[in-house]
Length: 186
Image (cartoon, rainbow, N blue to C red; front, side, top):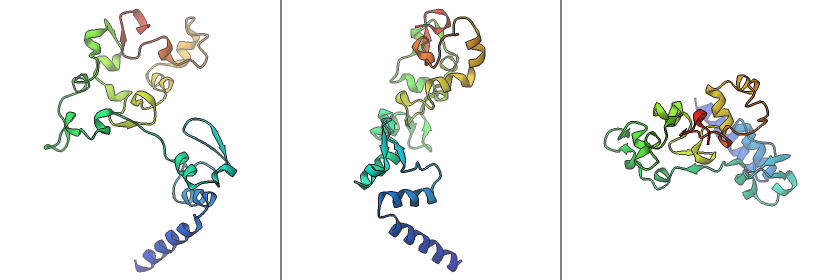
């Protein structure tokens, strides 16, 4: 056991020394964690490609590229846990979904004649993360990926209406929560 601790300490120490430059830092991070992007062409969070020679200018660049930017739900951001959770009872939600969400967000049940099934079932968390996400509107996945979890894309595209949609997001034509039109059209 003592030998394992010594080896672990030596590995961490060597990695710390080895990681003085941005490319060495990337190598150390790659060794320790899966999914660390290469320094040859790292994509920044805004989608611009940054070449490895620009990474040597500052250690800040590599940290900015690796750490994702999160969209924070306002109560979570403001540390207002009690607005959704009972802080005295194991942080249990104070209300069931969707009523909990409707405390602050639009009540789609009273707004639209036709509701999308997850909205009707009160399953806000099937599309949205309640605390933080890397996508706008706290989405769990990009719009189209969310839609094809329940809707068969191949079947939709073979139909005449959707034959020319290409890479369009479903929400360009459909309201993801509900609509007063058929097929949740906007």
